[in-house]
Structure formats: structure tokens, C-alpha cells
Length: 333
Length: 306
Image (cartoon, rainbow over all chains, first blue to last red; front, side, top):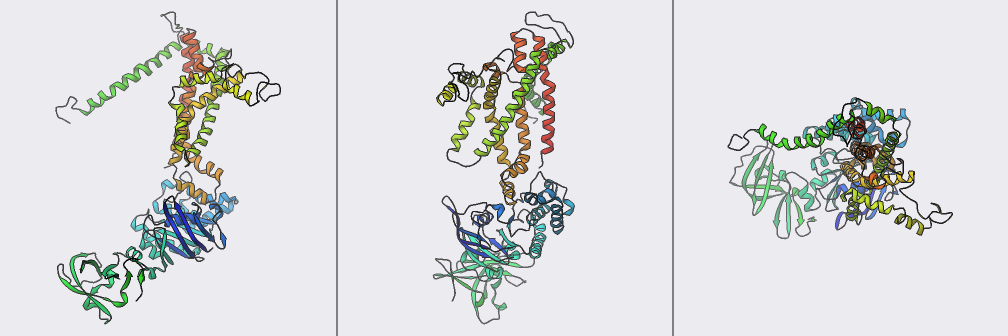
């Protein structure tokens, strides 16, 4: 197990600054999620850590060793690719055994370790099959088994769940977290899916345009977004923004409720012109305007709100965040 | 489909579209193939339009002919040495040409040039390069001090006589043939290498595999179907080719140092007038090539994994 540290790390592809000065420290055994839209540099950051890309500037530490010039295979890392990258001409057994046979371990030891990893992931019955003949979920497990079998110091995962269908993805996420806890390996996990990020990460680093915008626990990221990018990117539907002078007043849709539901005296009341209501089973989304600003309210219970009416809605002051309109930075009042 | 068009039935249209190719195949492949079968069991010659069926005599004679046995051995040497060289060189070139470097475009363009040249013209060029007196290769070796004086690496003679010494003549023929096949093989392998997902190679890199382990355990097995097809094409091209041999050496130096079956068949039937013998020699290819094709295609099918 190991700590990982990036020190003012940069990777430029010509004029494109894919990673643009990242400082980040990942604790031993931590599950860190890199969250960001596509093109935000999260995958490049992971590839730098793996040694598949050379940094333009800055350094990468694993424990206290600078690994900038260390070949991928000597870094003690393992990686699960988005496409799983299984070797199509090898059986599942040989796929999982490949990193071990490269090390030149004795045959019996390889067999024992492969069986351990396969047992852990519940794929022991698939060992003689080729990757083309197993399902997507099973392939993902094979890829994880291949990554874990060598007991890496750091495990890197690049959107490993994105090729699974929604139902499988849910259970796979749960299992992934269990394995990681069980083995306790330091993990860096790349995703653009905020639900995955929230559910899996001990901490989340939100990236955009090559920079880390905020690092924190899932709760911090959600409750205390550091800037308007994080506020807008995390949360579904996104945060409501209200332009007021040079500042933006922001609050989550689920804190924006009919005024009579908020008994707290520390509240702010808005005149909400309700335009459209979506019934989504267990909750409603109410679309409308305050002044000229589009707002969404997320109501978890049926409430007599009608389309085309103007209703007093309120937000507790504790749930309101303020941002500078020009810089997008949080203003703490 | 039932409108007033001239072909209002699909089957009729299909038939009309197929006719040209069927006629072509029948006239230019089927007919000569049948004729060579008939000739091979006859005593047909160029001089006499009459002939009679003589059974397997031609084949018996053929196997007793020293020229045939030499040509057969030469054909195998020519084919397998050329193809081994082509596959190894094409793989190296393909590995280099899929990388990014300045001038990649021009390098690829130059590589493809030999392929765009008519083979006969290219070979005539080499015929001049390998001229017994004026060869620029020899001139270069002399200038480098490797040839022409006692004690030089390639001997004291002023020229190497590329096409006049048996071993060197075969090497020259192989060299030119490799020059000719290399572009196509490289392009096929580039396509094959590009089809291997980059992530698979990277996964192997992270799993700890060095270059040679990646080559032998990942890249080559995944390339196997492509290499198989390349080998198959090259074997056919080489086994049935006589252009390079004929232009460079006419099968010589005498008696048959570079003679291959294709050139021997031409020599016997067209130049020597013995159509029956020529037909028998060319038919010898048929089961051999059919066998090779069957084996290679079977292996390729087994290796296809996705």
C-alpha cells in the first residue's frame, strides 16, 4: 500500500493543457475519485500516474519516491481500463495470470494467486473461457482480478463501470467498494458520473480544464461547492443561481421549498412563478422563474403547487451559498 | 419492383449482373485450367495441332528430370526465404511507421513507391544495378574499399557478378522479390497493428511486460490472422511468379541455378514448344497451393478470437 502525491504536475499536448498544475495527495488506502466532464484532464492525470504519459513538468511521488522516470511496470501499480483491455486470445485464467507469469513466479504460486483473485471476485467458474464468451459484468471482474492479483501498491481505475448496463452497474459499484475496503489498496478512480463519485469516494477531486477545482469528502463537495463550476457540475438537477448585483445567490433544488414548509425564521422568501411540473415517481421537479432566473425545485412530497401560478417559495439561510459573479469563487459572508 | 423497368424481377437482375464475371472467370481461368489438365496428360506440342492422350507419362518424365527437381528446390528456397524476410522486415517497418515522427508522410510515400511501379520495369532497373560491368553497387563497394583489391572483404575482382554466380544470383532474385512484396505486406501489417486496441498494449505494459514479451505474447498472437493472410498472398505471388527470375537471370546461371517452377514451365512449353510438359509442371502447383491455402485459412480461423 502506498501514498501518492502529485506536485505541480503538468501535461501539455501542444497548445492543449490537459493537466495544468495539479497538487494532490492521496493517503494510504484511500479511495480517491477524480470527477470531471470529458476533456477535464482526469484520465490524463491517471495516465501520468500509471506512467503511460510523461509529465511536461512537476513530479509524481509514490510513497517518498519520485517515479517520473520509472517505467510503468516498475511502479507497483495496476490499472483497470474503461474497455477492460482483456487479452482476447487468452483464457480468463491466463489473463489473470499474465502479470504473475511476467514476474516469473512458479507455476503453483501463480495458480494459487489466480484462484484467490478469482474467488474474491466470484469468477472461478469462468477461468477456462475466453473473454469473448463472457458477459460485460464478468469481463469487468476479470479486469479487476487481473489488477488485484499482483497486490499492487496503487490501483487505478478508468471509468470501469461505464460499459455496464444500469442494473449491473448498481451492484458492481457496491461490490467494488467492498473489495477496495477488504484489500485496503490505495485507489484512484476516474469517472464523469457524479453518482458513482459520491457513492464510492472517500474523497472526490473535481477537475475542469486541467485543474482541480475542489477536493473534499462527497458531502463537502455537495454541500459546500468551492466555485460555480463545482456547484453546477455536482448535483442533479444542478444548483439554482440567482443573479443579484455582482454576486450569485445559489441553493440546491431540494432546499427550495414552498414557504409554508419552512418554519425556520432564518429564511429567505422568493416569488416563484411555476411554469411546469414533472412527476418523477417519488418526487416532483418544479420548473419556473424568480425574476428572470430559471429555477428548479425538487419536492419530495405531493404539494398543491399548480402550473401557471405564483407561489411564495423559501430557502433556509443556512442553505444559501454566495459566489462572485466574475471569478466564480465562493464568497463566505 | 413490379414497375415497367426492363428487369422487373430481382433474380433476372441478379443474373444479368453476374453474367460478366461468370463469363470472365470461365474464359480466362476455367478454360485455360481445363486445357492445362488435358495437355498435361497428352503429347501436345506447339508445332503440331494434333495430339493424343498419353496418360501420366508427362508427370513420370517430369519427376525424373533433374531440371524439375532443381527448380522445385529453388522454388521452395525462393518462396520461403523471401517470405520470411518480408514478414520480419514488414513488421519492423510497420512498427516504425505507426509511430509519429517528422516526415512520416514522406516515409510512407517512399515505401509505397515500389508497389506502384510495374514490376517488370522495376526489375529491369535492378538488372542494370546488377550489371556485370557497370553495376553501381560494385562501384560503391569499390569506393568503400570493400572490393577490387587483394585483401578486400568481397575479394580482389573488380566486380561481384551479381547474376552470374549461383548463390549470389539466387540472393539477388530474392532481394528484388522482397523489395517488391515489402510495401504491400507493410501496409497490411500497419492496418493489423492499428486494429489492436492501444489499451491492450498499455495493459500489458502496466502488467509488467517488456517489449519482447509484449511482442510475442500480445502483438504477434493478435496479429496472427493478418500475418496468416499476408503469408498466404505472398506464397501465391511467389510460387507462381516468374517475372523477377526471368528478367534478371532467365533461370541461370546455367544450367538452372535460379530456375523456379513457373519459369521452367514457361521455358519448356513456350520456348521449348513442349506444351504437355509445361502443363504438367504448372499443374504441380495446384495441389501444393490448395494445401497451403487450406492449412493457413484453418489456422487463421482458429486464431480469430472476437
